Image 1 (cartoon, rainbow, N blue to C red):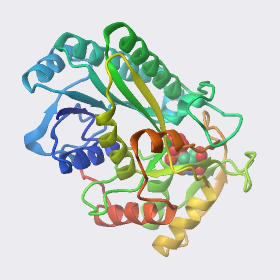
Image 2 (image 1 turned 60 degrees about the vertical axis):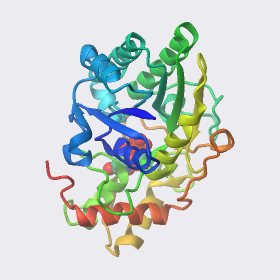
Image 3 (image 1 turned 90 degrees about the vertical axis):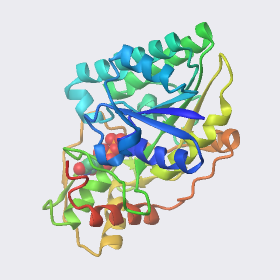
Length: 327
Ligand code: UDP
């Protein structure tokens, strides 16, 4: 297929591109490079453009005769969204509207959408199945829920077809160490902990140890980016006009912040100083996926089933690129 990957120079998107290209698809990356990195994409396949530039999107979709779009281009930081919701509604919701309108105008009907566990808010129990109530507790989660709803409505009214993949916590890096996670500023747990091991930070602050979990720290389901990429590849076989699929992508296993830090200590051999700080606004206590439906529907099977090899691939990337992409 001819694919347009919006946000394909970003962390999750760039790993997706590798898997899609590896499967023989013709892949074009469209990215404004605000969070993505030029060197994470192939120069001959990169189109630098904004989600808000609907005419450019339309011409790319038409000229490249795109069969399906993969939309990875959203801001995705809980804390940032609490402090600056306008930025989130503008990029995530309004940007997606421009993309959907460009697709409608150019007759491209198929979309794979990066959704998130954050749409569930603070679930009453885990693991989280697809039908659980959607009650986001931060603007980021709410923008993604609005986007899912937009897709439902566009499918119903205009015959569009979509697969929304709800990531739990994307982690790890391509085993080659050529691409990986590089955010500025970094706010994600595993890269921050590894920056301590690299000597780039003095310590990690644990955001709260009074959550209702076994050790009091938040629990998340860390899923390898290449496993997310595999799910996108499989999802390309599941487009049906006027229909949408929504699937939860995680391993089904949760790890506390303390467990993640211990795992990073084991992988790096570094003592990694940690201190307990305040809770971070917008953080739910425990988010663990029930991946049964995704496995059944897509025939998907995560390759990385424990935290250790996920952290090992992240450490491999960070050691090879201590300053990320350097741009
Ligand atoms: N976290 C932490 N210290 C940090 C960064 C993150 O304790 O410096 C915690 C955060 O509160 C959450 C978990 O680590 O419980 C994962 O956070 P991350 O930002 O990586 O992903 P999120 O769950 O927000 O998508």
